Length: 144
Image 1 (spheres, rainbow, N blue to C red):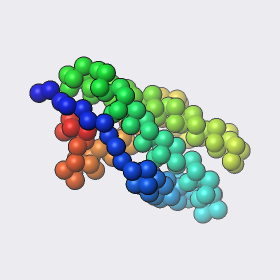
Image 2 (image 1 turned 180 degrees about the horizontal axis):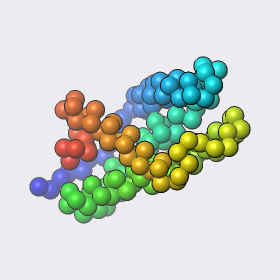
Image 3 (image 1 turned 90 degrees about the vertical axis):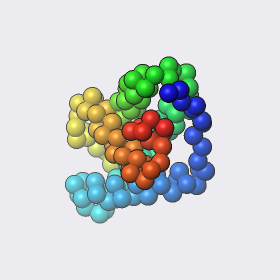
Image 4 (image 1 turned 90 degrees about the horizontal axis):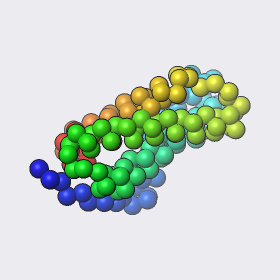
């Protein structure tokens, strides 16, 4: 089956609403391990890296890389997971620099660089599962 790749488009307001909402919730959860609610604003800023930044990693794959690759499902799957892995590492680097600038945090949990790539793959697979369960195009059904 040959896929017809349509560019992914979404209003910026929808993207901001979703990604900031995710960052607020994730920031609240993370702040509990980082010294309580007083750290919520800083933790929220850090969580914008995987939520908002992750959106752009996915958009880059969908709209730039995917149309340039073979339409073979295996090639698409491997490329997407590789983009998630590399993107997760890049986003973690941004989080680390931001944490240092905001709160002087010199070490982040899961210090191995490759761990962040694996964590981001898990985050993306979870997000894609939510799309799949809602009957929308996703990684799992090969339409998204």
